[in-house]
Picture 1: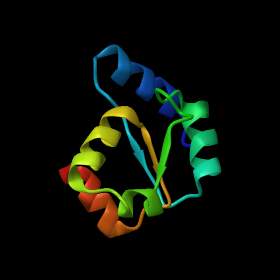
Picture 2: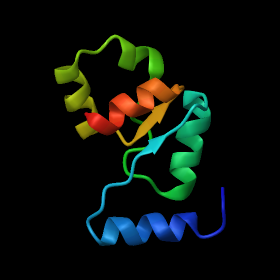
Picture 3: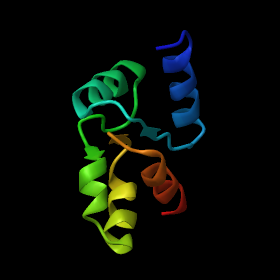
Length: 83
């Protein structure tokens, strides 16, 4: 983690900005980092294989619930951005 990240996340939260983590890391690694940096709901993790099984409606609902997206490949990251 880079210096200042937890503070930046806290500032975003205080400003009403929702922060998501989209990473290729394993779910456990992503969850630990999310806890460390102060992301909201770090225990709720959506993985790339889970995302692949979702239609666009299900994905839109999960994006509203989760802050951590792990084991994502570039194509999945683009799908998340457009959800």
